[in-house]
Length: 79
Image (cartoon, rainbow, N blue to C red):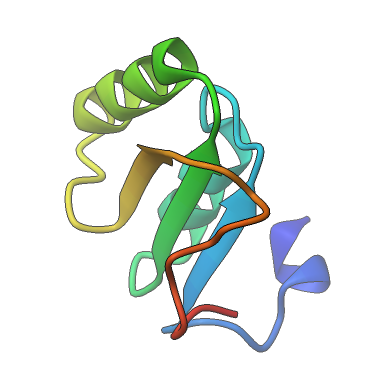
């Protein structure tokens, strides 16, 4: 279960690099409703799908997917 893998990160902001359609990030946002998840992926189509699925699952404000490069991450406050 996610709880056994991620026990001490509730309430944090995490980044997933190469998130594709956001399956893992959206699941984390569902299991930990007080957590923010940002995924970065180089494919605009994957980012679009991930954000569409996130909206359908009412994860607004808890999950976002952005187009970007995992070697140039523009975030500092992320686990």
